[in-house]
Amino acid sequence: MPMFSRRTFLQGSAALGGAFALGAGVAARDGAAPDPQVLTAQFADARIAADGVTPKIMTYGLGEAPHASTPPVLRMRKGEAYAARLVNLLDEPTTVHWHGLRIANAMDGVPEMTQPYVYPGDSFDYVLTPPDAGTFWYHPHCNTLTQIGRGLAGVIVVENPDDPVFDAEIVLNLRDWRLGTGGKFIDPFKPRDAARGGTYGTVRTTNWQREPVFEAPAGGLVRVRIAATDVTRIYTVALESAAAKVIALDGNPIDDPFPLDRLDLGPGQRMDIVVRMPESEGQTATLGNYRGSHPWTIATFRAAGASLKRDLRDIAPLPANPIAEADLSIAKRIPIELTATAEHEATPSICGSLGYTFWAINKVPWPGDTPDPIAPIEELKLGGSYILQISNRTPHAHPIHLHGLSFRILNSNKRTFLPPPTDTILLLPDEQAEVALVADNVGDWVIHCHIIEHQKTGMTGYFKVV
Ligand code: C2O
Ligand code: CU
Image (tube, rainbow, N blue to C red):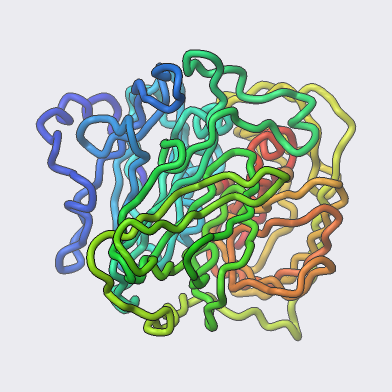
């Protein structure tokens, strides 16, 4: 049950310091409620840019010192209860959304809709059991452009004891920062860009570092979990100087893993690949972004030690997640039209408004997080099968994310490869796609573009599952 422990918690928190190191205290013993992992949303100074320390990034401390050099990764286990206590040491309200986890609505982190705002000095207890294994992520759902833009976003690894064993694992959190000279934050967006593809950051990072190098066993098989947590950027990922296979997309396994060639990864999406490291010590492979005319380096993998002589064929496909199949013969069709809308000023809200409306879903621009939300796009019956007919009537790509429910892409006028079930579909310009889902999770589930400027300037709606 969610609860506000108010300020009293903070008095006790010093005594708990250090007790909740990464991964500790997480597993439920004998079905008992697990100890919460403390997630302290707080400010820190961080070295992101080349020319100065960035003051006041926002980060999560995991019950100890704030993370100021690397974004904290959370580890959970498939089917096991996990608890986190968000403690807000920022100067504005916040929440945590567990992107891609199909959990109870009350834990979903959308202010007003699923929980109260967590005000500065307050805390909120989240308890959830991830039903699916894979790579997910967590971020606030309040003043989201500023809060994610300043650093609040981390990868979630949901482990499955039945997964194949790799020689190493590397988690990559891809994002940009909007920094000016001396590493200071500049305006988080430009209105004219919000009305188009979104505003890009100025410093590109992987795990908050510029072009980091990771060591891994020579000739070994490395699982690389990649999450695009940027508020705007769509990546086109490819690997040079080593072979790799794609084993999961958006947390869900690929039955028949295929070689990584070039693959798009939009904001909110994840990709798991297995890299066969180069044969000899010191050789490198480079993961790059090939979108646009100037490819650049995301990360370099450097082979270390004597070769393990492994083969990409040694790895069996990951076990599937238990996502229900929609019954297409009875599924109800729901049109979802993504459009631009007449520009007007938006109403202010506690969780931040960008001050403009540019976008709409089914002609309705989302008015912001209010105690009195607009009507749902549609009321879905618990257990019912649905086909969303999503039409992108704009010349821009939109990564559309649905909370609480995963869906399968049935067809599209723009793609031949249909990925496994997902929570986020990157709709290309003018794309029309049909996706199917079973409404097997009760509650109000937001659907929105994960280019946060689009989300916050109208491209949001929700389904009510009853
Ligand atoms: Cu990853 Cu509603 O968000
Ligand atoms: Cu969008």
